[in-house]
Amino acid sequence: MRGKVAIVTGASRGIGKAVALGFAREGAAVVVAARSETAPHEKLPGTIHETAAQVEALGGRALAVRCDVTDEASVTAMVERSLGEFGRIDVLVNNAAVDFAYPVLGTPVKRWELVLRVNVTGPFLCARAVLPTMIQQGGGSIINISSLAAAERGSGTVGYSAAYAASKAALDRFTWALAAEVGRHNIAVNALKPSRVIDTEGMRMWADEDERIDWSSPDRMVACAVFLARQDARSVSGTVATDEELVSWHGLHA
Image 1 (cartoon, rainbow, N blue to C red):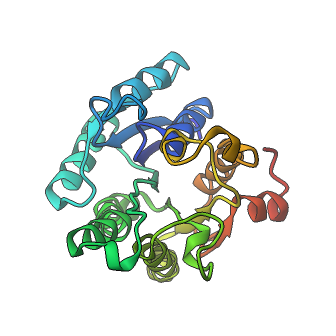
Image 2 (spheres, rainbow, N blue to C red):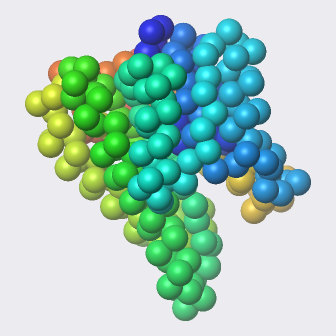
Image 3 (spheres, helix red, strand yellow):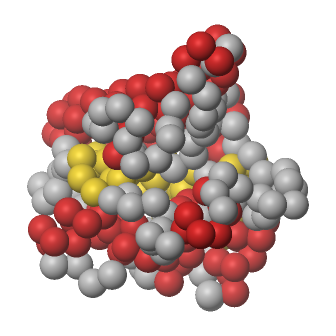
């Protein structure tokens, strides 16, 4: 990925941070985009500035940008700053996401709408903002981080809310539609989802230590994100798959 520029949303912690650092190890310049300029909670560490510092400690170039993916002006400003700093955008990882893990009867409308705004409208706004640059450059890669919740029936492997499940199903469908739309511009659009619960700061807040026995590190997700970041419309596009599937299908090392 040397010479490429990647935007990763929700990169202050968790999967987003791991992907940002993985891209840096592969030589990419990374735009670390998220709302967290300070840690919101003692049990939820991580900021955009800390991630950017770790990218730079790896010898990479980083730009920390506070961005609310639900706000069009904020997304536009983030993309403009990225172009001003690096002059190009090759990869977008739509990782920022939220959940409100309550039953439908306990979910206020404002919480339902927030989940959909962050998890669906956010990727739409970010993709729309980077597309003109990718089209002008003759290609690019957009990676949407999805979830097994999109297709699982009942409660699934994790107690995700109906709002979260609906948002991820919409994100999968958005991935297919966008891949078909921008393929002629040589832009790959794929969705990647973890096959097991990933051990992240956010997930630890919701589970006791004995519940984490079968959790996975983000390493396989990082390997798959690096693989997808290298694709264009002529190679792999329109795929909605788990990390386990991509590792198996393409012989990835993770």
